[in-house]
Image 1 (cartoon, helix red, strand yellow):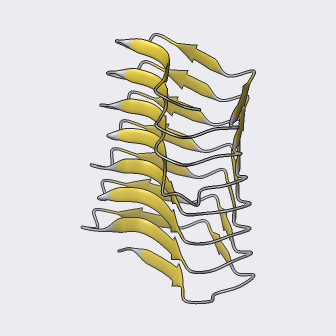
Image 2 (cartoon, helix red, strand yellow):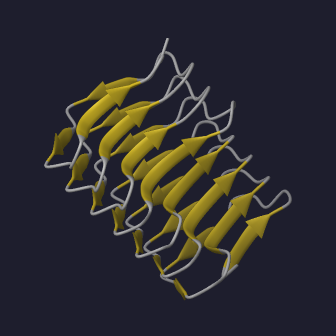
Image 3 (cartoon, rainbow, N blue to C red):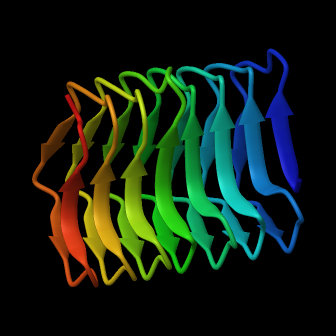
Length: 173
């Protein structure tokens, strides 16, 4: 991993860093709260930026490109804000995972040229708000909403020029 923020880290700012060519994540935030991740660039890592089991994280103006996995991963995270992020040419642009990815806000992000999904909300992520995102030119699906992921709000997103499906809901009840 390039930069790690974890184990109870609180009220820190990670700003203006470049993390590239790591075998793990470019930036990894785990088991922490109220941290800000601002203006960083992650390039050619396994995953660009990954949040795990954290809350009240604010990320803005980060760029995550050409990572072999997910550009931006949100896993078991609550009450976080992802704003003005750029995720280009990753396997998945922004991915929500885990049964506790709840009440997050994802707005004004630009996701493009992913080799799989532009944005994927996988099993049991609920109560998230995705507004004003631009999801374009992904190799398969633009936005995927997966199994048992209820009460998510999508509003004012621009989803276009994706190879197979623009917006796909799979048993999202």
